[in-house]
Length: 100
Image (cartoon, rainbow, N blue to C red; front, side):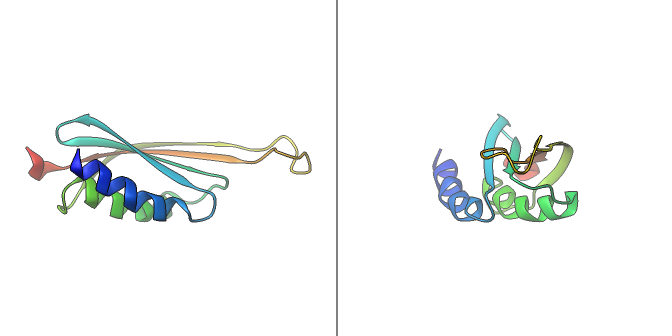
């Protein structure tokens, strides 16, 4: 639980970048799912770079092992309509092999 609180503090600073946010969900004692949401689409490599620091944090400072990922991009119907924005969702699975 202590790791989660440390992570949340760090994620607050990461999430402040360009209308994005990161959520972390523990799937098992040594695996997590990191979800990145943003208002614009970016490359897989860039998202994985953004997720690297939070992944190291949840792995207690050890090197995370990236697993499967999926991404979804939904374009706005009209960019002129108020309140309509693009939405980019990226879900990355990671393992922390040293936490076993």
